[in-house]
Figure 1 (cartoon, rainbow, N blue to C red):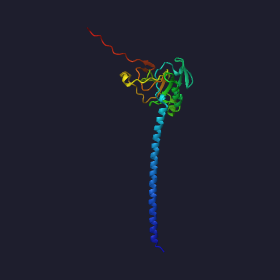
Figure 2: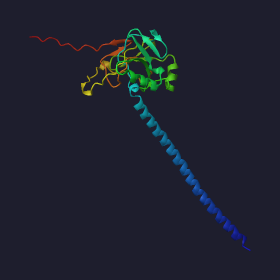
Figure 3: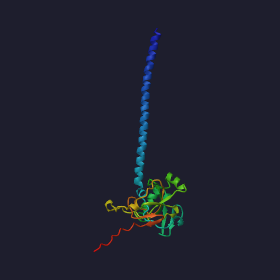
Figure 4: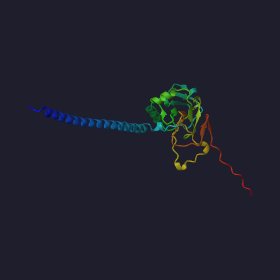
Length: 236
């Protein structure tokens, strides 16, 4: 007959072995959980990068769309619906890009090409064109009392605040960017206005976003560049 003390010692040793094995398995599981969390986070980040790259490749014209050559016609005075209205001034159909999905707006811009489209659009402070499938855009367009901004003049312009009912439409023009060496230095009076905290309501011709302008619109009127300084005649 075995000694009870020896049996107890054997039982205790077996429990120590079981505990050590369980501790190893628990550490392995904790490491696996941490690794899985890290991989899941990196997967989300890489997916966001892929989605952004895919959007940029799919929507090159929509992302660079910009009002280029406005006219005095008002959206509210045109006949039509939320998506399209007819402008008596330019005798063209004006499209509301913000009432279309991003894919529909991109297809529309590509189908009309350069100089063949009159359009109305909304642009967020980060430069994103608001479309029907943008949840942020849908919520923001429903807010009342938001001050609207309009971009004027061919090839892009500095932005000044105007009321929604003063926005204009115009033929879309995708301007060829001016080489950096050929661009004139901007005059101090025409410095761009910071619109980081505004939502822009743009209506008019569409042009490339990387070109500059010599004019800008203030309160619905296009103001020409200041005349060059004159020299006094020399005395003989």
